[in-house]
Image (cartoon, rainbow, N blue to C red):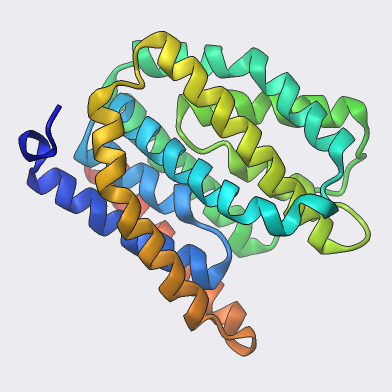
Amino acid sequence: MPLADLMTLELAGAAAAGLVAALISGFAGFGLNLVMMPILAVLFSPVEAIPIVTIMGLVNAVRMLGGTWRLIDRREVLILGCVSVFTVPLGAWVLINADAELMRRAIAAFVVFFTLIMLIGWRYRGPRNTATHIGVGLIAGFLNAGVGIGGPPVVLYQLARDGDPAIGRANLVGFFTILALVTLIVFSLEGVMNETALTRSGFVLPFVLLGTWIGMRSFNPATVHLHRRFALGFLLAVSVMIVVIG
């Protein structure tokens, strides 16, 4: 479908959301999917929004993969990624069959929940073993396909690991690459990943790349906590508004 046929205020809003989300992600270190997903779910339907956000997440992860590949705990990431295969189809089924308005509010409510956890500084203190890897991977797979945000459980899980924090960050990049690929394959089989989604993604992508570049250049280690507080405050305000007024 030609891009000219898709040019709408909604698509312009999606590009603006991608730019803002990438700016926040670039200087705060997180937030791309969390910012984009609830906004795009309002601009489009959740079924139309999640493929776009998933493609953006994949591009972002692949862009970072080269610099983190050697640090990845391959056993852990493979377990997390492989088990997600079992729950991504279930999440996709929920997404396709659930009421669109209910899903919009559910997506925003999930972002509110995760944002509050980040604001209070909660950390997972439980065990880390094969069983917990499997559990986290199953949850992330379902959430990524169902609400477009599979990262939070894995982020909290990786924050709990001992040792070099760079390994946890590398694990996130590796896992998100696998998860996005699995999700896009399932969406393609279900007919959710179509020409319209690809065309919209192609339009939004340059704005995401530009926002990431500006955000990373604006990053200042001395004010990282201020950046993260701003990002969390923005997420909370947007998501609460969507929950309340739809």
